[in-house]
Image 1 (spheres, rainbow, N blue to C red):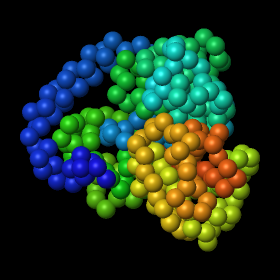
Image 2: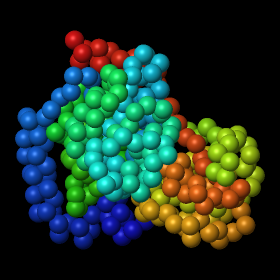
Image 3: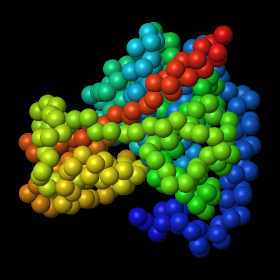
Length: 328
């Protein structure tokens, strides 16, 4: 953990010197939210926004995938919009396919296009991405990935995902803490999902529980899926370039895998072939988000861990009810 992260998720210490900057950040963010919400563009189809109020990964992408599966089961034709963070596309808005380059489109949109089999569009201006989907595809439900603070896009339902283990860190907004908005913002969202258990009571309202579980392995060299038992009992070398690598290490441990070496990279790291050079003779395992950028260099002993978000049936029932209310 970096020195900054240790302060964000512990006592702020020397970061208290930045309290005036935090006050300015919160003030500007509040005015921005009020102004953009007042002038937001709302499409003709329902919009569900999935996001969080903290910096770093909380499990939003698996939630989007679970919502797409649910929406299809309910007869919707869903489409996904995303900023395309980490990518540098030569043009926006842009439709994303599973074969697109993550360096241009971002790793998460390419992963979602691969996993969800539904239209995906990217643009820093999410409303522009929605217009592209409505123009080129027969979608009747929009899922916005990591768009809680993108207030220029009107929405029908807001879902905030909370990391149960890390919570809200020291409770401060940037730059003193990891929060993009104060915790009070969560009182206004429709649903709060808590990824994993917490040792403290994080909210005044009871969040819906969710769990990220491993379901299988994919060998990158042949794209074939295998059971988790394939690597059990073997020491592994693991790499992660995600917002919260510790969650990946924990998932591997819960699967009964033995991590001999764990290497961490920055979130959305632009992998190169040298990054996959092993420090050990053991199988190399990584997240699906990282594998999207590494498959061209994979040998026969390079693996991807496939995960999914498990959500209560009651949550989907409540979501359907809320969606029905907003449509009428």
